[in-house]
Length: 116
Image 1 (tube, rainbow, N blue to C red):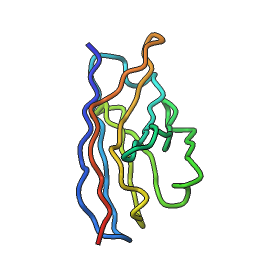
Image 2: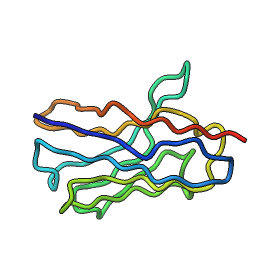
Image 3: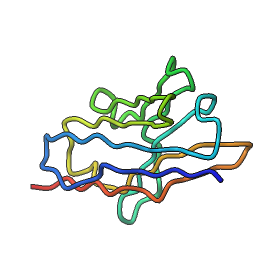
């Protein structure tokens, strides 16, 4: 079955960096667009970034452009989100998502807290 497992969340000070990982299994990872979303307390889940199967195309939310970088390693079936210059408003649970066979799959998320 499809599984997505996020890791790498932590408490970090403003201006700091984190690298999130999403390990995927149960589907042909190399042909699926992968994306990251986040959900802050009392907010709706929002799009953060996406990457095409070949890594040729990426897209970002305006709020993270220039600070976050999405990448993937198809040999390891893993997607990454490098987050630099983190700010308190980046505090959220971060989820990765894959659409396989028309079904939306989500991981359980990893918590990123940005605070001094």
